[in-house]
Image (cartoon, rainbow, N blue to C red; front, top):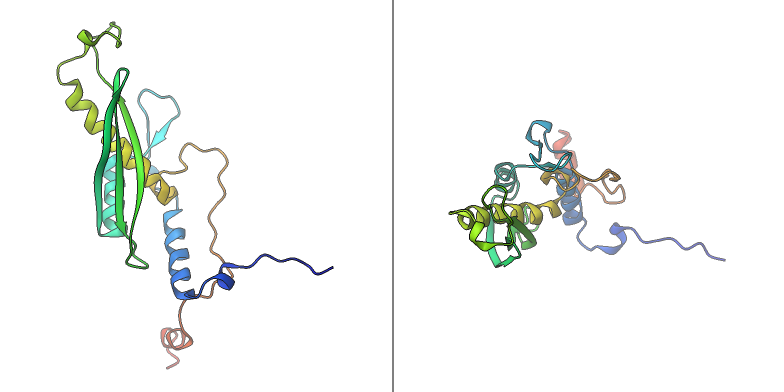
Length: 183
């Protein structure tokens, strides 16, 4: 009986250079964020997150070109929700890609009152809730990039990302020789 072996990515792609670049990008995106960036949620004990300014900084630094669009919004019981699309230009292929995210925020009400009674909603509650929901939606979309964007902060069992050793470095022999001063 013949041994069945799964094909490698190198067997399946015609552009090894692009596959190598994507693997390098994934390695970067799956590093842990700097510990000083990680915050603990003030109301949810043990829940860690990256503040939106750090997520936006990473978008600017890594992708250079990106767009955030609100795709939908609404209200649910005593809060609001927003969906967004984060579009980004792939640094490896130049293609425009996207991730979608959702965020929600409850409306602030007078202390000690029921949030189901709309008369108890504080003035300005909507103008505070929607931006918070948008920030949460952007962070939810960006979680798809990987650990650097906070994807695994609250997960217990996470496999570390490893480079695919079956993909050549993506550099031609001429480029490798030039890099080592042999040309």
